[in-house]
Length: 274
Image (tube, rainbow, N blue to C red):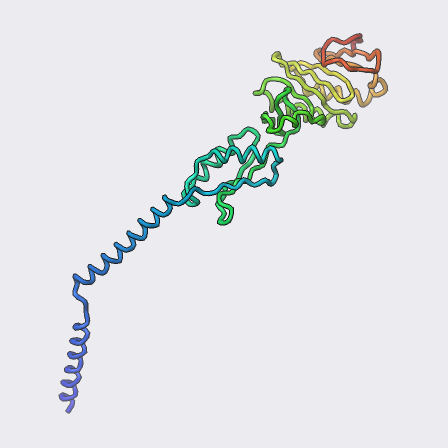
């Protein structure tokens, strides 16, 4: 009886395996199907690449945030001259390099936006003083030509003069002097570094100071302390001070309080101070 059941079970198993084997696809058909799928993928990739290449140039949107009207118009004009490809294939780094290469630009961000296209956001340099008559300089000592020439007429800007390569040094010197002389309620209005490394400084109260490049910082610091203490009573009567001495300085007294002469190292009258 058991043998009959085993025979029946084996017969059924053989039929099942035979039925499954009848439904298996031939090997050549499976390979053909795989090849067809790969071919379809290649076609899709090819058509997608062609669509990207044939897509119209991406729009460039220049944000006006943090820019003046003149700066915004100037940046838009520069960007309108750039050749760009599609939204996905445009070289953002190239656009960024072009923007940051503008002398008045400090920082820039270039991104893709589905609605606006390629977005340019720029932050201009912030001028803190004039450098000569045609340039401005920022707090880092970077000299640049402003977009709007009206910026050169800002009366609150001090005037820095010297070699452009020395601009960071001149800027740092001016900031240091303003810190030292702040207790006297005066600040630098003009500062010149001559080719011979002589400093000529005029403060907003008319006081002029000339100092050489030897122990410059110490001499200027000592002078601020003297003006705030021993010379405080005579401070308004001093026209110019010459610090180009190792063991003292000279004073030029203001004969008439109306001072309107250009910065010079030729005082009207002198008295030596040891």
